[in-house]
Length: 63
Image (cartoon, rainbow, N blue to C red; front, side, top):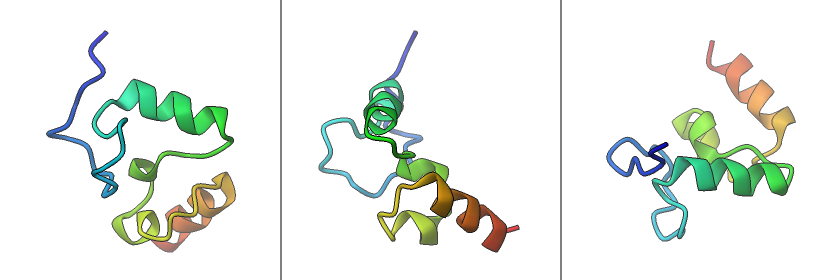
C-alpha cells in the first residue's frame, strides 16, 4: 500500500516528518486522540484544533 502523497497533501504543517505520508499521519493523530489537519477546511486546519468536536463544528460551518 502506497502512503506517500506529498503532491496531494493539504496539511500546511510542511516541516512535519509525516507530511504527505497519509498512513503515518492518520495513525499518529489517532494514537493521540486527534484528527489530521487535512480532514478540516482550510480555515479550520489553521486553528490547529484537532478534536473530533471541532471537526464536526468545522463541517457544520462549511456546509
